[in-house]
Image (cartoon, rainbow over the protein chains, first blue to last red):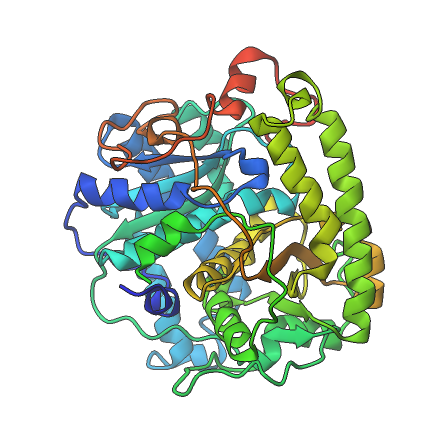
Length: 242
Length: 242
């Protein structure tokens, strides 16, 4: 598949057919992942693959537990079942149903890849520059081979217990949990905000006249939420620059 | 270009021809970038493009200053000029010369893209999952179109001054600085550690027999450094799991 097609059609896939993923395909996806850049080419990324081994089974059960708890909180906090969400045919209710299906079945995904870091220097956001590009390569290579997955950080709720089960060294950590498999059912298009909201030139909020979406682009609904918040209210107490 | 070729041949490019980047190419790269995933599809990423505007000129000068200072420290801390580095034809000395050229000219790169986040929730590493995949898409699309770039975080030294010049809102921040242009001169292959060092199955440090590099793969020299450190010494004081 052409790079541009892969990049523009890779979307979160949360329902998988039960087919196992051949090892040659897994190897190709992980080779792609590990070609990604990292600070000083240190390559701190490690990929821990969970299939049907004894520890994988324990880790899967824990992940299922964590994902269901995290989604339960989000469903309630973000009021998925209120407002238009009360109508089961609304986009909001259908999103909630899809998420519920995801967390109820994530422990049975054909493969779960834990993207780890061998040795954190600190937990500052910029450390992510040495692991998340590799996760994106993994997802693109999966798309190229006919698989789909989704990057989540919901393992955070059980990270310490996972670390114990999987024998992670003290300085290592998990950056992302990526279930993978052949997509099941229908999946919609990639939807994002218009480029005019996401690309600036020379200074913040100054549109770049040339940053135009290609014809036929599908957009996410509503204005960018983070811009809303920025304009609407004072900074949150924990959101300082430091 | 095929996805797999793009992913496996995209490497850090630090020397650029002076040719300007056509706006249609820029738009295509930024469209690719913004197709990347983010937590709950919030799309907190914003791309601030620096070309030849009045603020861009000030920001470029600041970035040059920061990059030279950061590299100066690294050159000395990592002893680039000692040991084999004293021999100017050694790989170490050639790496140092390439980095020196990079920081001495980075302010003249045809385009510098600042990958920003509109509104940090916190600065935990997992926030990076919503911006660095987009940076990787940008670099892959650049490669596809015949450009090259490199993702750096050396803006951190002058982030507050940049934020002021570029009118970033209080809750926004810069996640990466990505200079871009047509590659100048010769650039080597992508080199990484063998997959056996980077991919585990079922538990940490347990090799996945199927994770084999394709024939002809070029490897980074030496064993993975982070594994060395893990085995060799106690955890650093600041490297706890929390």
